Structure formats: structure tokens, C-alpha cells
Image: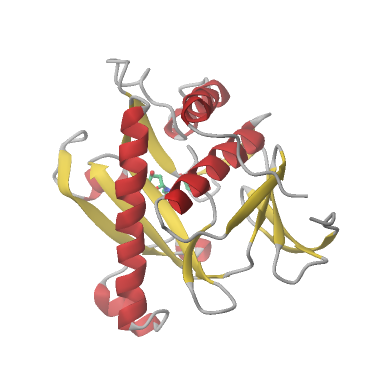
Length: 251
Ligand code: TMP
Ligand code: ASP
């Protein structure tokens, strides 16, 4: 492959920057060390976090690809850089919960840790200015973001992601409590999994550890000031690397 030249900054989010390149069908994503929570009310720099999330995401996108789930991922040119297909992100965050925790337990009378079978799928409107509110069917329809068929496809893909990730993490002695994904349309109109899949966007509990705080290996360590955030992400990467081939490099 010929070397890819970076172009202009297309978009900067809280944890990543997206750049155009000299190839129309490829954009470059830089994973940053910035950590934010509670709609960026809480902020910090965590050295090494960007590289860890980029590597974990690359492995997980390749896992999904092996399981027949389409994603935007193309390859990893450097430790905190990812090449992806350009997509039009659907401004809907899909959250799947296998175990009750987090906002669910603040909004409903349900004990943290309760297994959810079948998993609970919630859609949120991705807009920081509104605080990413939970969507109802009627509100989603009113926003006109997705046709009925597109919504069914979005949910089908998200549930397939859950099946794939849950099985994989369980094999690493990690419990996939819940996660958020974003999806986007490619130039040809295909809906694919996009954004990132990392301990920033998943809740992962170490099944080898009984203590309710010590077992947390995800961004809740940052949200709850538990410390050891980068070390926890490093542990996730170590287990993932132990079970996967090295991520595809692309230059
Ligand atoms: P919640 O319990 O706060 O609703 O979070 C559910 C899951 O979604 C959890 O794995 C963290 C993830 N998440 C994000 O990735 N980004 C967000 O902005 C929020 C609120 C949650
Ligand atoms: N991602 C959101 C933020 O950066 C919220 C969160 O993950 O807790 O503020």
C-alpha cells in the first residue's frame, strides 16, 4: 500500500480527532489521551490512554469482522492511530446492558448487578448540548434520523455485537456489563459499526476479582475516582492481545 498523507482536521471529539487523507475512501483517527465524564464536566489527561483504546478497539473491530459484522475499521498505522472508512455517523448512541448498572439503576428500581436476560437495548440521542437524552420510539420517529428498516438493522447489528463481544470477553474472564456503540452509513449506504469500542465505552468487570471496586476495569475507575485507570485499560489490552493476532497495520 502506498503511504497515506494526512489532510485537514475534519472533526474533533472529546476523545478522538478525525483527519482527511489523500485517499477519498480513508480517514485517519487519532485517539487522544483526554478523559472526560459526565458530559465533559470532569476532565483529565491520562498518558497512554489513547494508545490503549486504539489498540483495544482495533482488536475488537477485527473480532467483529471475523464474526461477519461490518465495521468502519481498515487498519492501525501506529499505536494511537486508526485508519477507517469515512461514514456518516447516525447521531444515535446504542447502549446494550447485560447487567444492570450505571444510569439504569438511577432511573429504575433495579439493583446494581441484576442480570438482564434478554439484554436491554436503549437508544440515546447523540447531542452533548441536550445531554444525550434517552429516546422514545415516538421521539426517534419525530427526529426522522432512521427509516423503520434502518432502525431494525441498527438494532440487529448492535445485538450481534453484544453476542460477539460478550462471548469473547467471557473467554478472557471479563464480564461485559454494558457498552455503547455508534454506527454510520458508508458512501454506498451500508450501515456499519463505527467510533470506538474500548474501556471508555464498555463496562468490564474482572471475573477473577470478587471486590466490587477492584474488579472494575473501565472508565468507571475515572468516573468514580478509583485510580488506576490506565493500569486497568492495560490489563484489558493484555488479555485481548493474548487471544488475538496483532492488529492489521496499514500505512
Ligand atoms: P450509562 O449507565 O451511564 O447509561 O452507560 C451505559 C454504557 O454506555 C456504559 O458502558 C458507558 C457507555 N457510555 C458511553 O460510552 N458514553 C457516554 O456518554 C455514556 C453516558 C455512557
Ligand atoms: N462520554 C461522556 C463524556 O465524556 C460521558 C461518560 O462517558 O461518562 O462526558
